[in-house]
Length: 220
Image 1 (tube, one colour):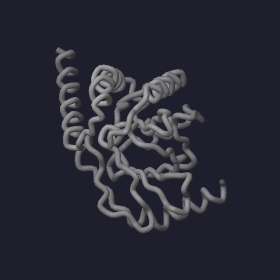
Image 2: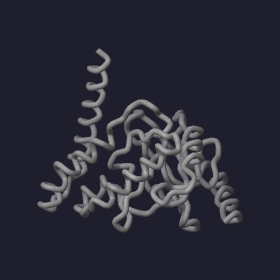
Image 3: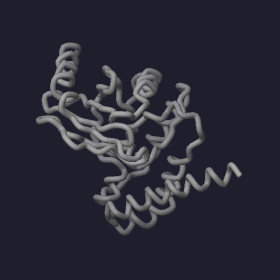
Image 4: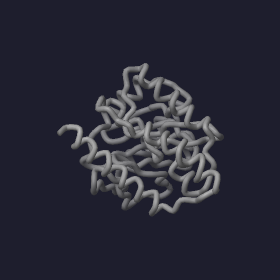
C-alpha cells in the first residue's frame, strides 16, 4: 500500500494537478470540470471539489479542491477524528489542494431516484448510525443530502463529510428522512417512478431557498 500510495501521489503531481482545470462558479452548486487529463476519470463533483479516479489505482480516489475554495484542512481533521468506519471513506494522504481517499462504490440516493433503483430502509438506518458515530467523535453532521450519501449492496454510505466541523444546526438529513417515509415509500417507490434530473434539481434548489428563508425568519 505504501509503495502504491507513493506512486499514486507522484502521478497526481506529475499528471493530474498539472493539467486538470476546475472552476467554482457559485458556492452552492457543484464545481465545473473543464479538463481532465487522460486516463483520469471524473466520478463526480461537489460544491468544493471534484473526485477523480485513475484505472491503475482502483481502490483510491483523489479529491481535488477548486481554486479559491476553502476547507481542505477542516476535511483532513474530520477524517482524523472518524478513523475507520464502514460507512465512511478513509484518508490515505493529502496535499495542498487534494486528498487521497479510500474509494467507496455505490449509487447516490439522488441517482437512485433518477434511475428508479429501490432504496430499502436499511440504507437510511445505516446512514443514521454513521451520523451518530460521527457525533460521538465530536463532529456535527452537516449538509447531508441525497447527492452525498450512497447505497452499496443495500447498505448506506456517507461520501461527503467536508462540513462536519460546522456546528450550525442543520436539518438536511432529517428532511431527507421525512421525504423518504412520507413521499418516497408510499408514492415514488410504490409507483416505481423515475425522477428526471431537472425535477430533482428543481426540488434541490427550492429546498435550499426554503431553508435560507426559514433561517432569516428565525433571526427576526
